[in-house]
Amino acid sequence: MSQQILIIGLGQFGMSLAKALSEKGAEVLAVDMKKNLVEEASQFVTEAVLANATDEADLARLEPGKRDSAICAIGYDSKEASIICTALLRQMGAPLVIARAGDRMHQRILHLVGAHEIINPEMEFGKKYANRLIYKDIIVDTNLGENLHLTEIAILPFMVGKTLIDLELPKKFGVMVVGIRRGDDGKILQPRPSEPLQGNDTIIIVSSEAAIPKLIKGA
Image 1 (cartoon, rainbow, N blue to C red):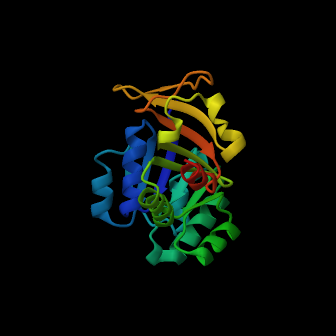
Image 2 (spheres, rainbow, N blue to C red):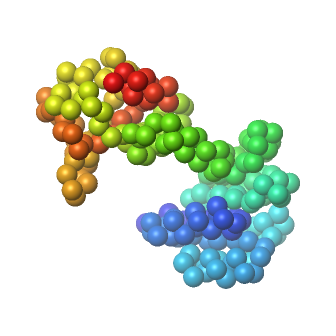
């Protein structure tokens, strides 16, 4: 059964998220106070509704308690509205409430009113892009939480022709290889400790953020 997701706030972030989730098969109910944004979202989401999510009656009609998750993506220029909306979502029994924060104070208040998760898209993008600029070998970097990152990185020169046993990456750098992308088809293979790495491989690793520069400098 498809996940049922409520997205409130159809600015650039909310609209992009609604479209991406819809493309992945989720049943998205998209909500905003602006008619033009609701009409735009209606082209690809399951349902788009014109409503004021800070109005208790309006929000209750959306039945957030029956959704798998509810995302308050209201923009930073409406912090009060995002706080009220987040509090109401928790009050109405939404099982997973994810709220968008603009700064640390906003984030603390959203936690206090009950948000299960807090996201800051601009901050996350900034961190990822900084890593891409500084570490040219990084292809993808995903924060898994609790200072744990899933990173895809181009094979480093000192790794070519060596096996994972030879490299001792967990011992030397605190890095665990969980996949290898090889060949023109880009398939991800399960790592084999005794198989030599090839020059056009990319490796998918799980590590702390601090381990990544150590690995690259360790080359």
